[in-house]
Image (cartoon, rainbow, N blue to C red; front, side):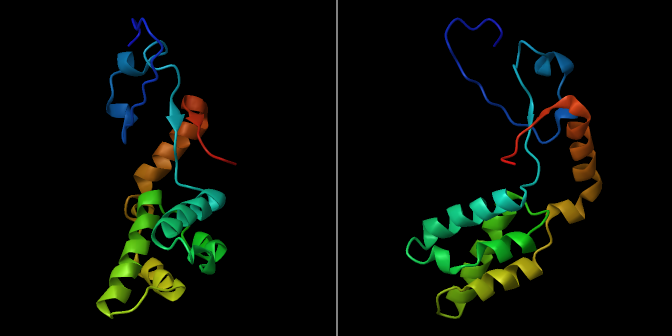
Length: 139
């Protein structure tokens, strides 16, 4: 990558950056390392909007995104999507449209990875906050 001759933008992801050899992540290989942590309130709200507007384009705004965002602290974007899917499955199994309350029920039954693997999440956040990566957040 360091010998590139044309303008190229390369993006790579890793769930465990410590398992990568240092020569891979040094400056010159990758110009910057960004840490994308768990979404904050504003980001969770946008994630709900994206998923709900995709599947409910005419009624997504009837869901209280602020309440949903507040209730999903420590949820990843994928986990937010999953609670919406779970709410849909529950409602569809009862032959009805899913509602805000179905999403709330799915949230209350969901255990996010940040709780089941809290030590690893805490370590990654401390690592990033120690200046080892640029924080990527919309705050």
